[in-house]
Image (tube, rainbow, N blue to C red; front, side):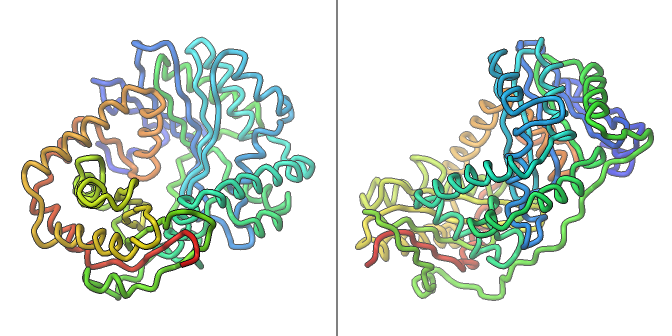
Length: 445
């Protein structure tokens, strides 16, 4: 793999993986294009990625990234909102978008014969949307309904509160992706336009496509579409590698599992029959060398019906129906957690069992059978997921934006295979010593 500097040279055109047809090139304007040609299918999934998410907003603009995502479907100089919706529907395809903390993605999946249409529509949306006051007024109500829907789901409420408590409620990375009802109501069309003007530009754009696609033909379609929308594609421009301000999590308070019961719960009262419990703390970043070890750890701890949490809390004791572990990683921050839902009177016992199971992994480790089973689960689900062009499109985008380098499937599987019981035990010990947050969503006691 070339160095990052050579890799982002405007003349760069690299076959990253000849065996699987992955190619990367830099187009005029600094647009990065990654494709994986697969002639065994008759479809293509295309994604247009911008490395900007909710964590890049100023507090007074909270929710502007998500609002912009919605508004780009509401009409351009050449198309109405109905035209955009009809374009994909009438060919049996689909199109949507995702706003996350560190990126925004616009994507479509169509037959290979309809790729020119999909590229034209998606590039039109990101370059030439009208962004009118009228569309903001209407779409604001849709977004408020989306936020209200999440508020009706205790698992959504608990997870957002957990993220905020671990990452910091007063930090950009800790705020909800969609903003709050208050911040969305306060957004002006000028806020949204300013966000679009600052971040939506050629040197910030990454395009990934997987399926029955020709790399050079797609490159030509992209340049035509972007220029038609008004973007200037200068020869020799290089991509922008967006720097992230260092986000340091406070890990000064280390707790053993015996201390978990003393963590003051963040209680959110909702009319419900169960208490929804989130317990965890700071974890590792998406770039950490321990990320594959973490995958194995999470599989053994709470990744399926054979996991320790499921067997101990549900199968052996019948204390919960739903119980699992989870983790999240960003470029400079991470978190881990465990979730269970139970009747309120069982909360204290379930919390103790959650913490104790991870503590046992940190002191006693795991056995070879558990290690083998976890690796089988991870590699199997990974391989099955990559049979879908949308998953492969997403993987290419994530590797480019988060990791800055391509990793083959074989290399990833090899790294998972190198994880051993000692590494899992060491990481479990670290995590068991960093419990900091307990969130509960449920009825009044």
